[in-house]
Length: 255
Image (cartoon, rainbow, N blue to C red; front, side, top):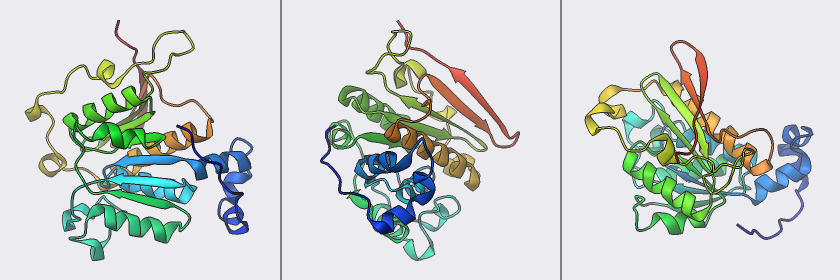
């Protein structure tokens, strides 16, 4: 989407982002791209917490946060953008306060609502990139379909008890081979039975695991914004926390 020109980086910003700017792959132009970027993070929970932390610190200019939940004490074992004083506050409000403390140059747009088929398209189209940190398949499909329709890159992640995965979806583009990039429905044609995928509350999840996967999601978003590296398009990166193993599986569009 078109964005207005941003003013030059201030002396304070040049110092804040100095370790980015000395990277030839990023530099001043890359930092300006980060400053202009609008990123929507769906879910201010386990995955959204590290995503919001690192994108705020990186200087992403506008972060939209979608969440309709309140902070509970049981969240704090893994949702590190919230703290004890935030219990019973809306997660969007708690996350926004933390982001402001991290980086006052970031604009936060709070969307205290649950995404539905009726409102997802309008929200997604208002941002450049979407990061899915949700924990249910109905919402994941709705986000993925809206991103495909609006031609917005989607960084999606998922976690189990000790393992997780990350991929990037751009099904509206073609790859180097001329074939359409795969969609979320190519990767997961249909949701698994509800009793096959227990929730975190039912099965548990190691707090540090969501930090690993959420940080990988933020890295993919930064790559997409700045145009560096090779995003995980058509590749599912899987992490086994207990074995300390990363594996990558390629997948393609069906038909």
